[in-house]
Image (cartoon, rainbow, N blue to C red; front, side):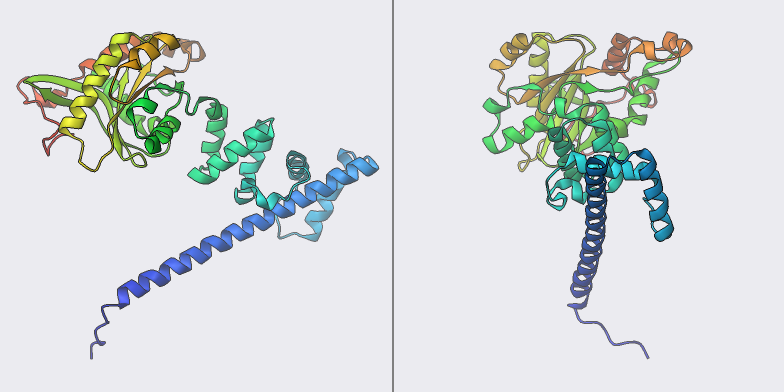
Length: 362
């Protein structure tokens, strides 16, 4: 005999209970992590106090580590090296209740990165908040520290304060960096245009990582038509938090005022042909290579009506690569030329250009 049919309210009830269980599991995990961080901070604090009062040396810490491991064989984390990390952790947060800090909600080895790679409390707090907010893994936090994200975030030269509503302007400013560090832009061998395009696709995950949270990749060399003429966008993204398209125009030379006018044209086309009525205005990011003259950029953006920013981009210096690979790499100018002239071989010479408002557009 088949079971009786379930009421219509069963599925929503089951979903609600599942959410409650997952929420409780997450809170339990966070609670356990917080208690462990408090324990480690307390151990480190007592070691600091004992060293100050009794002049403990490294040998005493080694003995302490051995005795703790003997007493608590099922617990990890009581190595001599880790006890020294605990001591440094307590020294980094003196006279404070650590549970009130963002660090208390981060995994232990995230905190080890913060105390071993950063010198000031302000920098540690900045990266702790960012790691907590964005859910950075240990490897991502390490990368962000190595590339000095706190010195680059929000530093692009923009006209956002004049071209965007106040509630979006500040957020958009913080989304952009200066400079961007594209160390993965190394194309080996006798690269052809198609291979340069493929290299960009292969590294899109690293590209998104450097761009930051919220960027969704839409396409490269996205074509559109204006009055019968065909144009291409180097890179097109959609930002999930800003709720708008972001057009990136990549240049392999220093900033020139005419770059802003061209990007302004691209933004007008995307707004007219692709932007949904619920989307915020499209934003442009001009990435240039080489030192830019800030005043020149500000003059160029002064009367531009579309929101855009200008940042530098850098790649790993060729001198750091093996000689054989270094000699095989195309120049940055060749890379830029390749970005601007890529053709899809399979399309053939008579392929009809796609429009941005065409459902079949990339």
